[in-house]
Image (cartoon, rainbow, N blue to C red):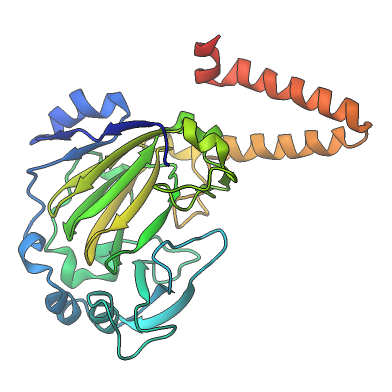
Length: 318
């Protein structure tokens, strides 16, 4: 059994920046954009071409014996492989040379040269491939944050998480199942940081995650050439139905001063949210001075005050 409310992702033909910015972007809802010209990559990016043209620099990849990769409990290992060798392995379902077992799954989330400081940018890390792809210019160049190369084996499922920036996922090759949940579902997704503990969104353990039945699931399928717009804070879960190659483009849609500038991955919460979390930590520490009955009472009052003052969905329900 999965979430009880299902919607299908809209599929739109959006040919111009003006149409996107006027009719789609303001709604702050995910859509699949179909029919865009994403460049020569649509035809060129076969596994043999990528392996040959992408260079032989080592890339750090996730390797797992399970299809459902779990970032919270780390059911995978990190290994380094020459890019061409990684592509060769990821594109085949059985390995003669392997780290864990013959059917292990591979997932690349490209990193900057120095992962602690540099953001991922396909034009920097894979210049020989960057000229093949045309990224829709739906944002100002000054807002650009990163362009992340993502490649994975058939069957790989990437954990449910949210990002703090708006982004476009350009599906170049392979089909992919995408499941999304709106930001207002945060109470039902059993969060650990920016990731949901509900690993299997199709067959969740409802004894362990009973509130998940209240989540509002939005589902769709990406075909080669599709571009998925994912607004910030929308939770998303991806399953590679085939060996797949995508480029994920992130941009800063809020004022730059709100983002953490020591965040090369672009997944740290905005600075005001970080400060608010620190204040909550101090409040919880202070409540520990009280007996349990009082601690419970005042914690509930604080939760209600935060919801009534700051939470849009809570106010609308009243």
